[in-house]
Length: 287
Ligand code: PSU
Ligand code: MN
Image 1 (cartoon, protein in one colour):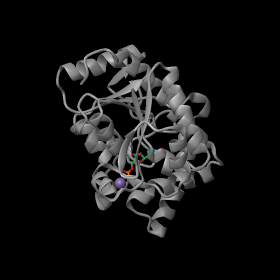
Image 2: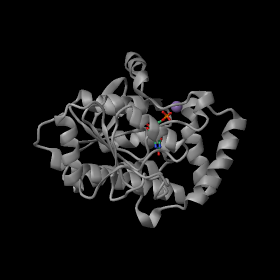
Image 3: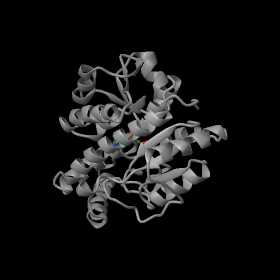
Image 4: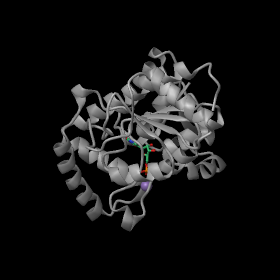
């Protein structure tokens, strides 16, 4: 099984691209020989696997909260609807014995975190999700990428490039930062995860796959659009959970939709890769 997060459906992508991307991701997991399970909280119930109608509800409601791991208790106690971030999705998946997750970009250390202390809980959950595999295209480009990689190193989370020597930068092929580890096939990724598990090492393994080349954006384009968006966020006083949705939306406008197309393409490609690795891992000893 492959867990898919729902925050990117409810808060990361606009309607109707969000629904299309969510369903295309599920189809990609199936194509690769695995079973998709989109995770969300519906009426206070943790759900692993949604019907198509439920996925659509997450995509169009507009009233889903963004729940990270720490919010789950409140959401359940109050019977609320919530989309789950990577930290919450990974935790719920592992509660149900699912240890492979696919997403777009990880949360991480925000720029100016030295002042704001804005560091995503995703990093903390990755450090605790022993033997899990998270497939992504790096971290969100709006983050401080070198600082995020430093934290992942400190917390013992291996970061492995998929057919790349560089850490990808979300909608951009490379962050310009090189990685120590690379694999070139799903079976190689599965072997690495198995070894990590056998050794009883803590933390998840992060498998980082670049955005499909035909959809990739140039680094300069993204950086300049981002600089403008960050300034705007600051002047509007956008904080905490609202930062990511705001910046993603501004980047979409600044790139005339290209960042959105790239975002969709990488999410689906990561779902397919996660499905391929999960089907190799299936039948082997779990974490
Ligand atoms: N990547 C995207 N869009 C998103 C996210 C990641 O392209 O919406 C979400 C993920 O759910 C991730 C969360 O877990 O952002 C991190 O949010 P924060 O930085 O507030 O911790
Ligand atoms: Mn944050």
